Image 1 (cartoon, one colour):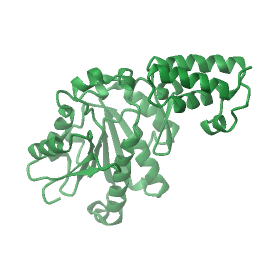
Image 2 (cartoon, one colour):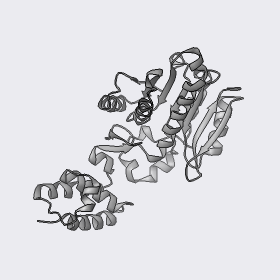
Image 3 (cartoon, helix red, strand yellow):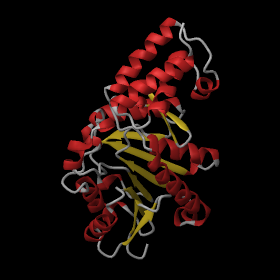
Length: 299
């Protein structure tokens, strides 16, 4: 009977040869899934024997990963912002860099509840998550606000063009007790009638089509609809920017995730779509452009 350490060694070699950027991490996560533990349990007990059934399941998963299938799809879950989300080929896999969007949105909502116009009017803070995918942004935000006992003062709408993604987002919302809190709908961006929104959040497709064609890796398995942003990556982003004047009140704000090389063109697109708006690019921890922040004129 093979041990944990022996299976990991062989799997790491197989995945490295297949081109995985993180062969050891991939192997540890997949073996943890096969034996019914977590990654720490695998790392801590390399001498533990692995039964033939678990070893066979692990070998099958390693081959799936070697063919390029994302670990998150194989495991059926992805951790994001400290929360576990069901993940499969119906939607984009949540990325760590998107956690910055949740943090910025949480800060924005808390500040508004503390003394913003919505608080003065005694109204809910209205939030829209556009292109929700798995529901990760809306759900992580709701959980962060629930921990602060602030969720009752907020209403959240999550929209996605894909009915399959919406079904997955609803499953995730139900798993976290939020299906009655977040309104998850099928839709192409936001209709003006849905507004106004105090806060519009979006992680829309922003990879240029030509880049996506040669990107490989996880992108070959994820929905192209969630990745392809057109010739320069900003086609869908521009469409949303064009709707913002009708969606944001005077003190509203939009936070849109962008690519690390899109700071200048995204800023120009925002100013073209929303003349006079206050436009700012917020960097991530590496100092790279990550969030486009748009406020109405004098907002």
